[in-house]
Amino acid sequence: MLAGGVRVGEAFYFLAPPKGGKTTFQLAAALGAARRRFGVFMVSYEMRARRVLYRADRSLARATRQDLRADPSLLEPAIRGLQAAGAGELYVWDSVPQQASACGEVARKIDQLRRQGARVDLAVLDYLNIMGSSKSEREKRHELARISREIAALARKEGVAVWSAALVNRQAVDKKTIRKSDIAEAFEVIAVLDGAIAVCADEELRAAKLRRLYATALREEEDEVSCGMYAVDLARMTVTPVADLPQADKEGA
View 1 (cartoon, rainbow, N blue to C red):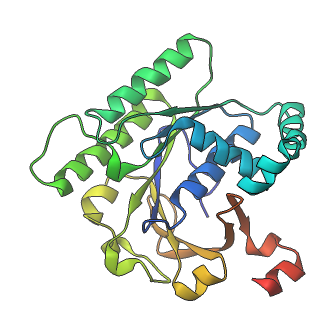
View 2 (cartoon, one colour):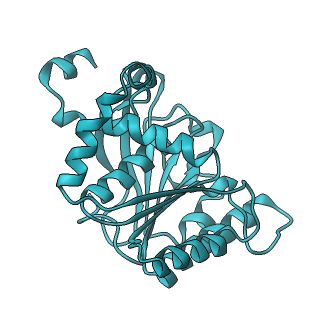
């Protein structure tokens, strides 16, 4: 659907309601890039870096928090597999919510990592609504639009691909299809993006641990189209295309 994925200089968002799976999908994108030997810099404004890394452990081991506490060795085969495949590094850093000039701070951290010899191809910013802009605005909608422009500029200036996320309006929480009009200040925020992928689920889909991805806006490809159904296990922080699930798991879902 993304014609090869997010490219250098491009910015894409996942769109979802609170607790809708934004961080799970962003972590899947980060680990997927690392597996393909890209360097990833992930910034969290919502939780400490250690908590993000714990979630990454769960995703890699495909195990719950309780499973890993009981048997940390469950993680070892996944780490050995990454090392054998020559996976790229995942750097995780936490910052303060609403920190002024958040994108400028990210740019400085990327430059610092690169001076230390690190490779950074992808920046994952979690997430737009709790970041701060370089200039204070009277209204939140203007601040969100400014932050979105600064994220797009960061991608171009630093020569990285960017994945971030944004919240949808409350009226869109239970929709099977989230469109541009369902996003807070959608047109200002989305205007500068290269792509926005909505994570959609009504109550029935959530009960079945399913999410439907929908291309709300794609600059170079057809938008307003479905990107398929995914099984989302929040306990294990895993995202699996339904088409890839064993038949028994499909029937269970």
